[in-house]
Image (cartoon, rainbow, N blue to C red; front, side):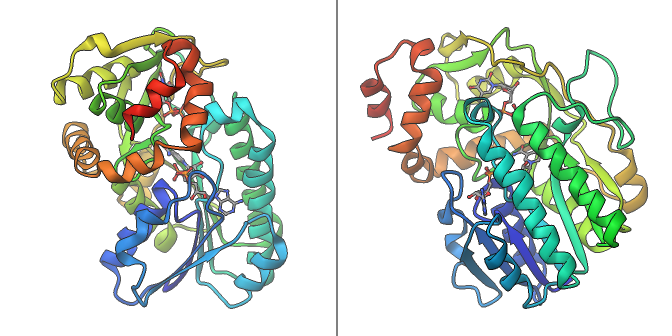
Length: 349
Ligand code: NAD
Ligand code: TYD
């Protein structure tokens, strides 16, 4: 697995994965294809942009001609991270999620099958299983029951990937991971949003009662699992990748406030997300048993390191939290947080 095509490599997990591979393998060659949507950020890769083992191509995975031309050059593996990834945005505008996540995946699969790619890894999510009550865990055998346009589009993509494996013999794997946190995560997601708002002494918008539960995994642990799946997994296998680390949202927010020594009065309960999934939890024993992977980060260490990263890399997120991001922020939170857009903008100048 030397010649690797990473899609969506300018996003959060994709860029961490590229760093991960380059740090570990001298003889790998990585091509990063990314459309550079609002979530794609080449600053994430600035320190490796001149590495001879790395090249960047700006392209849309939905554009079959471009993708197929590229894949015809021959790749050992394709790791598909490219996606619209934020549930709240999928509630605002579902269409783009179907376009990128479903049609984009199919375009990659079709090109991969035509040009004999040796491994196709679809980076999916635990959200395809849907919401759980207080008890239990989803295994890979659970039926899929997505509830947001985001998770529905990821579910459709999972089915297509498995169908290409089954019908055409394409060597595919699907990984379904729980919520990631770590460096370079776009500050629309819970953890980076709460850290950066706390650093700016701004209100922390918690949806509903704050008691929704997510399982959290450090992004480096996720990258390690994907690398192992790419190299060792049998074609056709699906793997859950979890952190055994369930937390309520309010607990996460309070942890951040404590570590940054800021008052809980910053917490602001706001209107709940429509169709908000109550709890995600997966059983990851299969990947441990088959491939020997387990997470190495404890949540306390991972969070401390992550908070430190956002504290030291203020320029990275200040640049994002301007312009177009603020339009989104005001649409999402302006009414609930009761602050005029101008005041919100000033924080990040
Ligand atoms: P992200 O939003 O940070 O990055 C997505 C990247 O895809 C961006 O760089 C964007 O520019 C690119 N992209 C979007 N549309 C494209 C297109 N049409 N063509 C080419 N590139 C395009 O997302 P992320 O958090 O890094 O997630 C990566 C993958 O992992 C996604 O498939 C997501 O469903 C999955 N996942 C994420 C999490 C999480 O907690 N973040 C958990 C489980 C699974
Ligand atoms: P998010 O990071 O959007 O991931 P996902 O919805 O894919 O799990 O949200 C994580 C949890 O945090 C989810 O229960 C929604 C909640 N949340 C808030 O309470 N406030 C916010 O501003 C955001 C972005 C999320």
